[in-house]
Amino acid sequence: MNTVYILWLRQLKKYIRSTPRIIGSLGQPLLFLLVFGFGFGSIFQKAGEGSYIQFLVPGIVAMAVVFTAIFGGIELIWDRQFGFLKETMVAPVSRFNIMLGRTIGGATVSVIQGIAVLLISFLVGFKMSHPLMIFPAIVFMFLTAFFFTALGTSIASQLTDMQAFPIIMNFLVMPLFFLSGSIFPLDAAPAALRFLSKIDPLSYGIDGLRYVFEGISNLNPWIDVLVLFAFSLVVFLIGRFLFEKMEA
Amino acid sequence: MPIIEVKNLTKKFDDFVAVDNISFSVEKGEIFAFLGPNGAGKTTTIKMLTTLLEPTEGEVKINNFDLKKERDDVRRSFGIVFQDPSLDDDLTAYENMNFHGVLYGESKANRVKRIEELMKLVDLWDRRDDYVKNFSGGMKRRLEIARSLIHTPKIIFLDEPTVGLDPQTRNHIWSYVVDLSKKEGVTVFLTTHYMEEAEKMADKVVIIDHGKIISSGTPEQLKKNSGVSSLEEAFLKLTGNAIRSDEAGSMDSLRTHAKMWGRRR
Image (cartoon, rainbow over all chains, first blue to last red):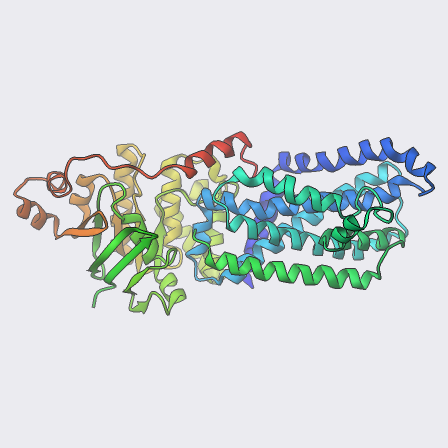
């Protein structure tokens, strides 16, 4: 357990010490929040869907979480190339614990990032149904973050350098983000899109967040938790398998 | 009873045989030099001995533990200083040391004591709260040597620990190593390209080329067998004068990339 803790602590320290990274990864969600929020707000309202900011914020919070999480997973490549990974791989510690510590660490950092975006969104008029709902929100953020950190780690274990990073962002993370119903409702979308959104784990994270923030959701929030948990478990186990096979 | 025993060790990467059926043993307390030109199979061998790479064939016993079956016991038995740096630049020197201590399951009291002792030994105690990214190459190396000893290993692997360092730092590092090996009774397994270092330090030398052991013995025996006056001459005589290709490639390109990204990690 100590090893999981020290790996977690390392991720957290590195995050807190890297101000450019904190600011940099807040930039994109804020840009989306402002540009989409104010750009589409009136159209959204005219279409009879209510306040767009209320709709958008859960998606943008999730965006901050997801992007930080996937990057946290991909960081494995850096650790490998700059040698630090070897230090952990020759230690008498199970690969399972290394993977677990890294994933929980990356997920924690992502949740902090998500909360930061949430706080900022209050400034542009976002309202939560109840302040205490922050706790279930953290649960949804954490599950989403855990999934994407584990996914990032799994991918990183198979890569030798960062060349593939833009491919992952453009062909995996962005589609998952758009298909999740994060920035527009998918109720009236073509069947194919709706199907894709159903197999997108992020849909369940955002649906859950919408429920805890505003009491509106497509599914029972417990189903969201369950589906997210199942996705996380599966990708974690795949990641663990790949991690064991990986050569430092 | 040798502390490292290697029998018929082989590593194949697809069709390429990096290490070809080598056998040797290292006695307890010995300073053992494993020499060879670039690409001879030194690092591959060390990676196998330190559980980072699965051998294709062969049997290895480290500190009497079987490399395949008793991995964690093997891992506890050695400390290693890698060819490339393996410190976390964003942590302080002390945090790097503590991280290692926790990973190796040392108690808090033991960690505090060992870390102070070792950091004083390599003259870094005053810099303990500095970030490693502000350290020079020589300081990083010293820190890595100290770190590899926190869990009081029986063996320490040093893979080209003095590469890229000035003569002053190199001398310092070797005097630390000799000091440590005497003080802690550690067996030292080292590789280096500086033949005069190996000649001065090593009790036993093994020369490997193209994945095969081509000669072994004390530096004296090797010189005598080749009929030359220095280990460097003996080495050149045994391995030839042709220049070997170095392994670069993806590592270099990634370093460039990391620079472009401003090393956000």
